[in-house]
Length: 270
Image (tube, rainbow, N blue to C red):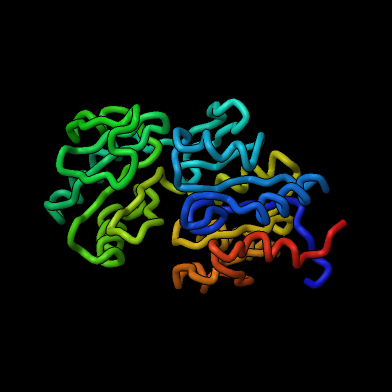
């Protein structure tokens, strides 16, 4: 693949494109600008909701972002939702009841995209007092469709808890993880970053063989599989989760070492 070059660049944000201080380095900005000037679009694929995307526009500019692990396609220019693939209330009620019965100290929150609700005992790690964030009962939270259901445990190891959630959820929804905490992210059945990426690429007349995708956590594995199996490049960060490293075609440096920029700079240019 020495002469291969992408026609679409896609990247996870946290732990990948963003440094640990949540900035994008000047080197990475310049490299992305060079590819865009060559006509190669840049797409973000993140677990973050739309309400967390305003600041990234200074780096990426216009284009489509895949948010909430594929549940929301967002136009970055206007921060407007293009498509949504939510978890429906009946599925939410089944899953939360099953998890609460199996592990009573599982606590829940929901991401609507522009709003976040959590049980009183659930401990958010970010934007605790931000606009749109509020406490609600579980009954209130699951009364309407959500972009993402979050299940958290404060004492179980991460991998053990995610495995428990996967067992309870079964094929009713998609379970993944992008945190070092015992936090499971639950999306509608079949919805992943891969499905979002396939939709965006297809709209551009492209397929997986045209894509280079960068990621570091288990919620990137579905996109890695889609890109790799279609002949593209699935690039893991050096510090990536073992599941991501196992699914990768290539490995680059860490996010703090500008691994995305370094890999892109190594590829042939038009």
